[in-house]
Image 1 (tube, helix red, strand yellow):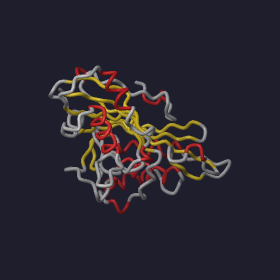
Image 2 (tube, rainbow, N blue to C red):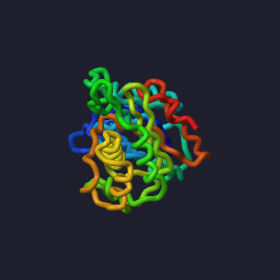
Image 3 (cartoon, rainbow, N blue to C red):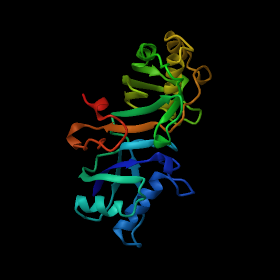
Image 4 (cartoon, rainbow, N blue to C red):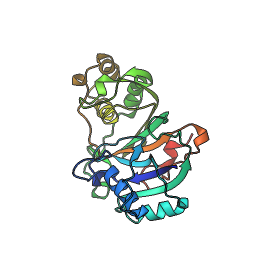
Length: 274
């Protein structure tokens, strides 16, 4: 039987998603909790497949995972049981049976990421590790219009080599962005990226370069020049991981994958409504 589950986690507590020898990753903790919940040490470990292998420090509100098991339990028992073995920085939101052809990674046709940035004269200790920070002197602000103008060149199918980490394992630098939204609420700026898929560090590299424009260090047209150069050397440095969230993963409608629960996060849910 194949099950899918929705997962939320505070990425600051883990060394990214993918299993590592130190055992301090999201995948390591989740698979250990699944094995403990099953309660039979003779059974082989449960292996999980995820929609997005987030990096160290990156958070998830709508991560989707699938795994195969012969154990039959009510859906709510899986949720409550697995959560009882997870650290407080990780929570299973839902579990549901899916057909054998469901694949959390390869059937995802779009992913939505949000970068939450706090700006101001001083950082806020209340959002440490939950948001990025950029020091903006009192009475000043980012040039939102310039960033929005610059971001338009990113829409569509593009070669994003300029925003690709040297460690990226993707077969191609060509990805499609459907939407780039930049929203300001007081000292907060939220960057929303919805696309087919993303390269390693792509969102953080895009945010870093957009902020160069937002600080009036470059004109909006500069971002198109960076994109066309297809060289990581010409873009801005990778921005900090703290404010990056995997918000939602899109699947064909017939799988009926639940929407993520956003009410408990610092991201305004209104940013992700159609």
